[in-house]
Image (cartoon, rainbow, N blue to C red; front, side, top):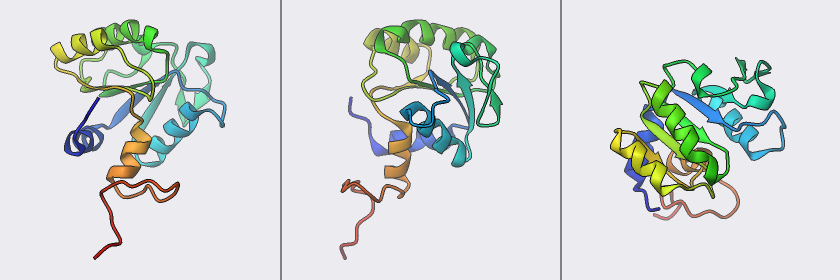
Length: 155
């Protein structure tokens, strides 16, 4: 999957309310620190995890599924296995009239679900992390030897 920087930047700039499907309250899980980071960056993060429904996370009530999230959600970020994506995509299309982006985390891909979402006018990102892309594109990735190609100390 090759996405242009301008496409990813546009997706991350327009997103306001993100439903994170499969988020964990365990602070050492990647889903937790990605969702926390997005919250700290000013996004409204709606946690979705049936095993923790009703609890509080990031100042929001954890929802059991996408049918319970606010209609204003405009991006879904999926922390589930690829085989779970079609059901999540259908729920997103059925319950989220403002959905603009369906984002699948690193290692999560489903071409058929992506095609269905795109046919409905939804932008799809597969096998990428919004936290990493945000840091890379907005000049915050500064450790680990990553070459972002965005900021340079060369004159």
